[in-house]
Image 1 (cartoon, one colour):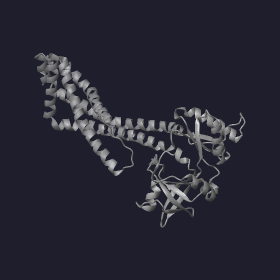
Image 2 (cartoon, helix red, strand yellow):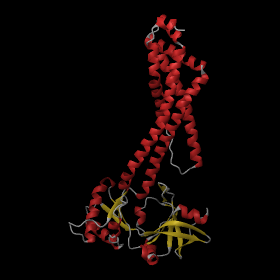
Image 3 (cartoon, helix red, strand yellow):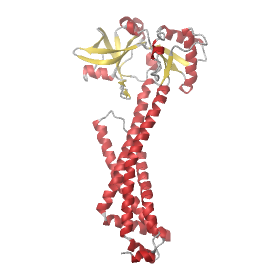
Image 4 (tube, one colour):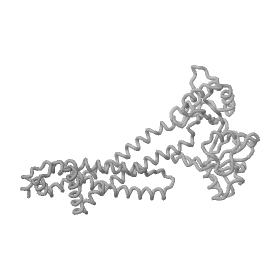
Length: 416
């Protein structure tokens, strides 16, 4: 019972002192509030970037392997990779034959996907740097997105190499400005293609390129009009079980070595790329950004904590006689300690609540001003910020509270 009354009395005295020194308490809490704004916004940005990164990576497909000349994650040994033999379109047919001949294969389907960067024109409008890919109707089985309007190219269009296409959202909006693009004709390198479908919006990959800036045409048409860009193709291979993608990758490696006619002692002259390899190479960069960001924001929070400690020491100094009187009347050291800790924590929570409110307002503003910028404000982040406030109050207020609790009541009553 006595412990409960001590806590109630400590809360009452602490809140009275904060109310009696409003300006000082608010200004002191602002230091912590600024630190909380920085920590909250940094956590929001990192969480959003992580979500945006996962969304960007989903465009590659977590159950797809890419047989290509170059590895995605290597920038050295340019001449070694440059001199590798081209990836031929016919290799996709050979791979599918091997897959069909092996009933226990972990591979499902191989689809050729040669591509190049082109400018797409319709009337007086044009869109540059468009990823233009030739493929078959089977690509729809591999694709990570569906058509929002219209349909994908069909088997007869693939076999006949007809001049039809499916476009991304950026191409559709850039050329037709809100009009229905289905049935409209566009020009790619002076060849006309009729639009039969529009992909659903996919977003961009880390802001480097947009998944929506693409045009897909039948493979036969691509071979006919883009002969110089078809030799070094990309072959996309779907895996039956993505939990066994490493085993599937080894199977694909063995099959492609057979297609290439490589001897056991010869090195691979091709690369097998996958989403996870790209992710693993970027993870250290993300971790470095997070560490640097939280270090910088932690400094601002540290400055706020120093302010709390300083003002609590001042408060103890101003109330030495009061502390002596309370001790003379029977107040225990623990009660004095709790009182000043509660006062420090309350000021931190006051500043922290202000900081969270400001951070949420900035989050809403950034979201409306830059809708494509990945940010995510979560209740868990708010709870973590409040916990940081409480911890900051305890750490910064403990030393002055301990000093107050250890005062000799006789010396305190004599203090002038």
